[in-house]
Image 1 (cartoon, rainbow, N blue to C red):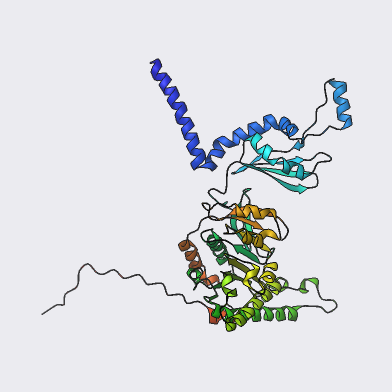
Image 2: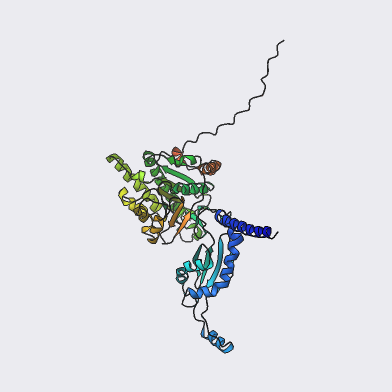
Length: 458
């Protein structure tokens, strides 16, 4: 009987350990909620003061407090850590606010983030500045980019699309009102197309005009033809479509100018310099132009093609420089983008505020995307492993950057979303000649009768 009890105890312990290990590997979110969260909270509460002291984040207390301690307790005065706020748990980690001591700055905590991660047994620690003297410490319990799961409630507004998840478990939102134009780079099988699918599927549910230029004969954007207002599948068609977009932009500027109230006594709300200040019933719908494989627009073989290339690049640069106020936004994608493409490439890149670099084949491509805005992000982009498609480094001209990863969405699901939202596409008469052909949905075959009637013979 004793042997059976011993075997049961050992077997139960081994089963619990094996189950915990499996849960941690296969279902990290469930493991964090059941095991990781209470363990990390206990570690944080039990070792907060000593950990802060070991990391050099504790400071000498005020003189009045040191004097009070000496008078009342006659013990040695020890450095005090930053004052800690309430610990709030999330589905991916912990959050708490710290009030910095005099003389401290957020960079002091950011420099010790790796030490805090090991001390409290979490996957990563991030520091965010809230207001002067207050920072938020965000602890992530597991690798949220290994299997991306977007939050159920993301809150979408017009021209705001939750397209990926950042490494600190915050949703990465593509906001066209804040970042009008973007450059997306990525080698083959790097996840660039997945990023594009998420963007199109998100914008398809909004009253936005979607225009595509896909010089790979349309194989990338044709599945979304039901929702696209215009599609060019080769450089010849692109050379005809781009002037129409420039003309549409100029017409919108004429509309803004006609609606501007600059006379004395005009109400402030009627004075505007972009389409968003126009009355809602007169405001033209925003336009998002997707350019896939932008290098195909630059490559030429003859003198005639060179003239066409210069004209197309000029139109693209004009749209990038002037399109924001007219509600026209660019999403430029490609495997390689550099000055060697030809005249105008560097000038076009300078107008693309947002930058997203997936895995690239050479360091020069990563430098072209991120080198001028965040040089330290170049090494992060070059270290993206091939077995993690969709992982990318996103930055903007403000200098900030972070690792992101897009969730998986199949081509069939994205195409179905576009078909279902086709009635939401605004009508732009100038783009009607470029409307892609959408084959009609085949009607369901009527079921044949089980028995065939025979004529009555008298």
